[in-house]
Image 1 (cartoon, helix red, strand yellow):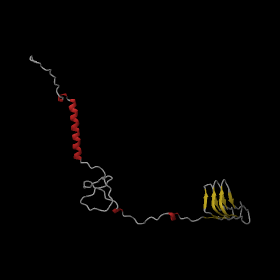
Image 2 (tube, one colour; image 1 turned 90 degrees about the vertical axis):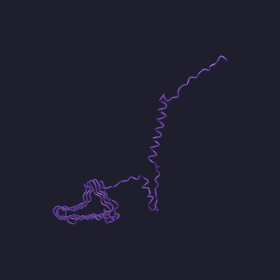
Image 3 (cartoon, helix red, strand yellow; image 1 turned 60 degrees about the vertical axis):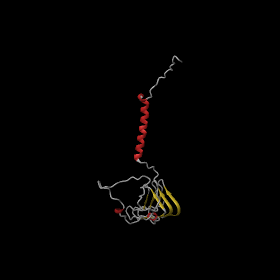
Image 4 (tube, one colour; image 1 turned 90 degrees about the horizontal axis):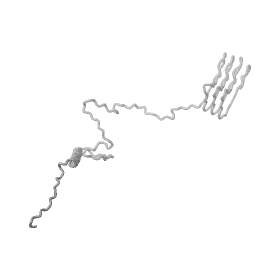
Length: 207
């Protein structure tokens, strides 16, 4: 802290620091009273952190405010802290923050600027009653056309069993008829074989 009421200004210089942390109402000030000029503050550090009501000031009342110059890779400050070089009734000083200029766009990939014509990318919708169809081909794809040209391409075979619908229905009817015959033959007594009574042998008088 450097304060003066008259005469020359008091200056503060902090250089070659790795980290400067101000917290809990800490201050770096070169304030001036009455007609004195605010002092200059020069800080050179890698990182500067101000928090919890900590201030860096070079203020004045009647005289001119001082100059604050901070050179750092990163400067971090919360809303309760401030860096000022003002004058209540005189000329304000200056605050200069020197940080490396980083262009975030340098790490981004360049996107193509050509606009794609979507008219040839999207198929028109199917109007009603126009004979359009929508086919679900499954995993095997569309079977090859026997009349088509054989092309050198990888073909994924469809391994599903192809069963004729008419043969399946005929086989089902035969099994149903056979089951019905067995069931009716067991339940209907009129189809059972008649019981024949065994007759005893007849012995004549001559033996």
